[in-house]
Image 1 (spheres, rainbow, N blue to C red):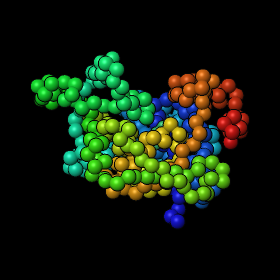
Image 2 (cartoon, rainbow, N blue to C red; image 1 turned 120 degrees about the vertical axis):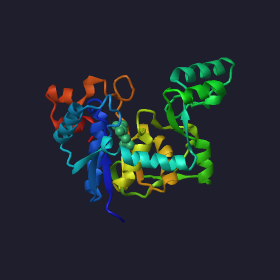
Image 3 (tube, protein in one colour; image 1 turned 90 degrees about the horizontal axis):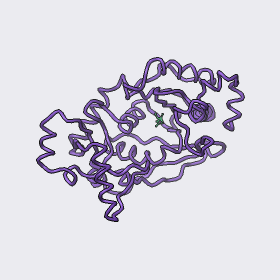
Image 4 (cartoon, helix red, strand yellow; image 1 turned 180 degrees about the vertical axis):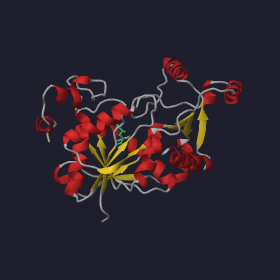
Length: 294
Ligand code: GLU
C-alpha cells in the first residue's frame, strides 16, 4: 500500500471553529496511526474574502492546537494555471458551457414553475438545480449577453459528462474514527445527476471549489480525503471530475459534524465557537480536544 497522504484544507475566509479543529485533529491522528503524511492546503480562491491576516491567524490556531504538518503549505491562489488547464481539457471535451442566468432569474423561474404545482429539483445542498438558459431567456437575449460584457459562470454539462462516462461510478468510503480507520471501505454510489450543471469557474474567478479540490488532491498525491459529512455529497461531483480528467480517486472518510446549540452546522461567523475566542476566554488546547470528544 502506498504511504497514506492526508490533507487538511481550510479556507482562510474567517476563523477556524470547533468543527475545523475536529477535522484537523482527525487528519493528524489518522496520518500518525497509518504512518502517513499530513499536508495543509489553503483554499483561498475567493480573493475578496480570503486575506493574508486570516491565513496567518489560521495557521497560528492550527499550531496552537498542536497540529504538525509538512511545509510548504499549498495555496490555491498560486495554482490558477493548473486549474485553467484542467478546465480547458473539459472544454475540449465539449462538456462546459457559459451560463448567463443571474441568481434572481433562477429564483423567479423556479418559483413560477412551483406556483403551477410542479416541483423543481434541489441539489444536495438545497439550492435549485440550474435550469438551461434557453428555457428561461430568449435566444436573442442569450446572444446579446454573450456579445456583451455580461457576467457568466462556466458550468459542467452534467448530462453529457455522465453519458461520456457510461456506467455507474463509486467511491471508497472508509471510517474516519476509531478502529474503522483500518477497515476496508464501503462502495458508495455516485449520484452526480442530483447536482445538475455545477459551476467550474466564473468570468472573473478561474476555478470553483469542485475543480480546484480535484486537481489539487491529485497533484499533491492525496490518498485519503478526511473531511466533514457536509461534503459527503460533493464527493459525487469530485468523482465525476476525476474520471473525466483521468485522475486517481483517493479514499474518502467523512466525519461527524459538530453542531451549534441551535442544532445547525457551525459557521465561520459564529464567533462563540471560534478557536480564537475560546482561547481568549482561557480554554487550553487539552480542554478543547476534550470538548470535541477527542
Ligand atoms: N475548503 C473546504 C472547507 O473549508 C474543505 C474542502 C475539502 O476538505 O474538500 O470547507
